[in-house]
Length: 199
Image (cartoon, rainbow, N blue to C red; front, side):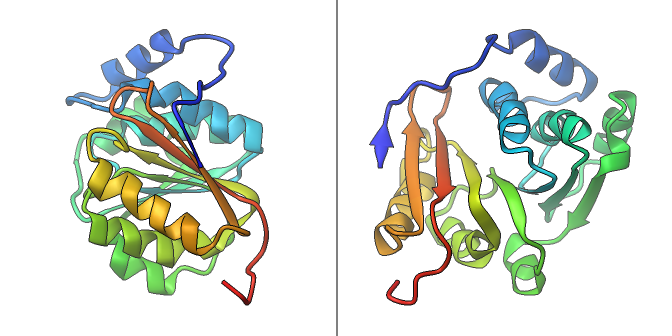
């Protein structure tokens, strides 16, 4: 595992993030990770994308802009629904590739069966829930797929520490990098191999 590595992107993405935040009202703490999320979809060629925790829809929009280029689809799961988000995504021309599931991630997980290319986690920031989300959804990520987790610095105990514990138990399957230079922190887990019976 690595801490403090630099994200590589062709532009800083501030204009991209600004356009999303203007279309979707509400405060966001994840503006610095919007462009990296978009780029992750493109670079992975991700078509099956899951978001755990969507709030005002800013991160969903970033994922959807990428999905538009890859022909993908985004499912967002959150127990709280913001009634303004669908209209905002519609204004951005992104609503047709999006499905919102009003449910706790822990309740969705046992029923999830689809293989995933990319997961973005920005949910409760509580260690127990983060650990549960990894146990439930990480096995569905394809080899080469990734899990992005926001707030690995500002909520280190609730987000990053469960990642470290998970990867340490499955070192042949997963690697993880904590991008501490991104505002509030952005963790990236990469699936290296299929399930190993020894782990």
